[in-house]
Amino acid sequence: MSIRGYEIGDLVFSRTDIHNDGGVPDVDEAALLAAAGARGVVVRAGSAQARPGLRIYLVRFEGPDQVLGPPVGCLDEELTQDESVLRADGSTHGPSSADDPP
Image (cartoon, rainbow, N blue to C red; front, side, top):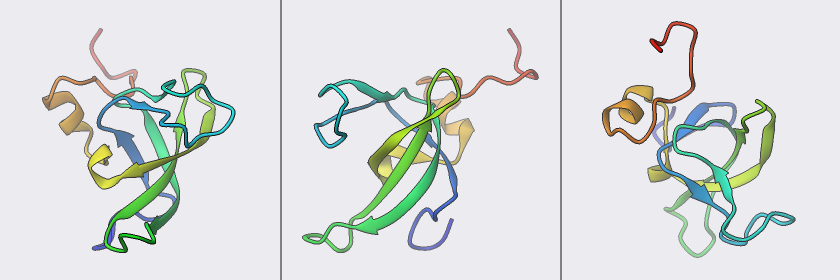
């Protein structure tokens, strides 16, 4: 991660459930795009033209089948790289691992 935020290729996790606000075509409005704790990869980073200081990231999150979904626009506060934050706030247990207790 750089001073400006996440970089293309960075692995990130969704802090909260992210729903379609109408910005993802061919997906029902209000459909769940990424559950809290979903793993994704930043595919593009930029800023809003009207608010140059506001960083926006296009992230492709893994679905339950481990296939990357469509790019989703996310803000800094919707993402984290720290899996312990996800576990600490109780929102999710993050991606499962063979080392995780049952």
